[in-house]
Image 1 (cartoon, rainbow, N blue to C red):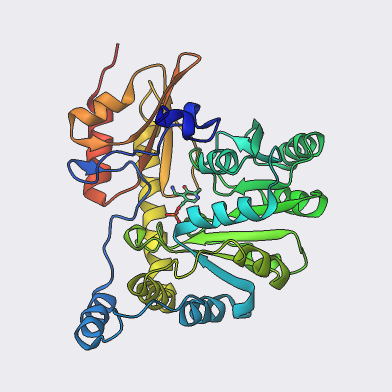
Image 2 (tube, rainbow, N blue to C red):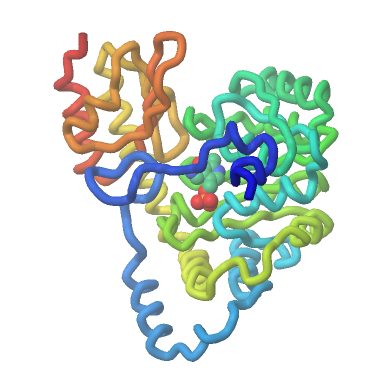
Length: 352
Ligand code: PMP
């Protein structure tokens, strides 16, 4: 038997498994989750369903009919323009599988959500990036890099993770109108801005909007995301959709949550207001900068090490380490109490 590492695909040696911090312990502000659990109306429905259920011995509906119906009603589109994944992570994977040949390129800003490049590479592709920007000029730079590398997919993340800012509408339209390839617009955090491009992409046959129940809908635990695109693109993406990918209980909870979209929109508004209050507190601290954010998190930069200061008070944030002497830490907006804790810890700190 050969060394098992030698049996694995070439190129995997440099890849690290995705191993975020364990879920328990401390004030968890490291994954941009919602601080609130499901509304009790939905929890009660689930209990009732489990009580009546005779369905868990059967595979779930692989076409996600009821869930896609509810998503389509919400966005006033046809269910044939929707497909669902195990989180938007799986949709990113399905899209890469469908559009990338070995060696093909995806283009994105940097920094942005790491799964675009990681998933492209796992699917034998490669990633190019240009520095993040939010205006038409930045869009032009991205288009230039995409064009030079013959990119098959451009990933736009708006609001962007980890910086928090949204691109201008003009910049997004500029990419949609001029791209020679598929454009994925990741709206994981768009609910916190209260806007979406779903209603505006119908005339772009190369556009795919991806959305998730993991953030504003507080359902990171059920792993459901969806993509909206032309019927032709949805048909293509579905070629990479694993059978029965979404568990029955996840489909149900996502469907019921979608039917209560107003409740989640108002929760997202509260989080955005809490974020703005936290920003005011942070603005008074002279040893760090907080990027303006349209999302449910704030990126802090400083010459000083922020993460251990937060950790000393039990707050877990996402530490991106240090580059060019600048440290970057992303803090999710939590409950008022949690945000106050963040503010108090940072205001009290006197780093040297
Ligand atoms: N897109 C962005 C921008 C994200 O930040 C995340 C999660 N961190 C995802 C997609 C994936 O979310 P999920 O798979 O939970 O839908």
